[in-house]
Length: 177
Image (cartoon, rainbow, N blue to C red; front, side, top):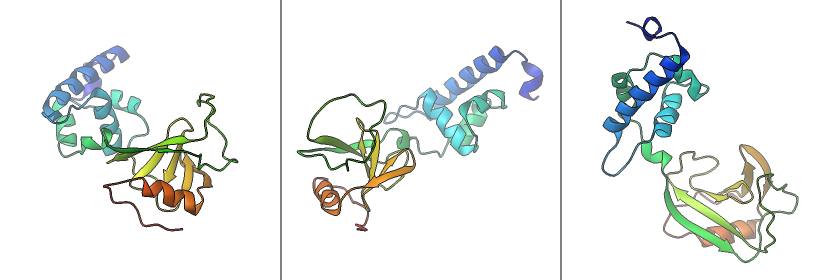
């Protein structure tokens, strides 16, 4: 019987989804990886090619179906392994790159770049470097700087090479500059 004939009130849909996803979390979690409710939502959105997670509320997704859909999903992508953090003495971000509105106003010469292994989103390169205070991501092959998926500028070749030289024990993308 389809879910539509069982529940009509939107809160019933939400409560049913929470119950079913909770059962799926228990089945899909392992000793080495704890799957969260957010992981289930993100994985289902990806597997079912949905626009957003609210679309899940109106789908017939009992726990068994969620488990079947996600039994081979790589949840480790949502919990990337931290590789390293690179602190530079001088900023390598070109001056014309606009700051993010979420950035705190802290005046320092240098900056910190974080690199994760198995990042959930391999864009723009795998791996890539995050500068969280500036809300930027650097392609470690060509030096392009992104905010979301928009290219805002490019690192100078010597700065990109310097950044790459600080990253140890990980395979970097081919240098393209």
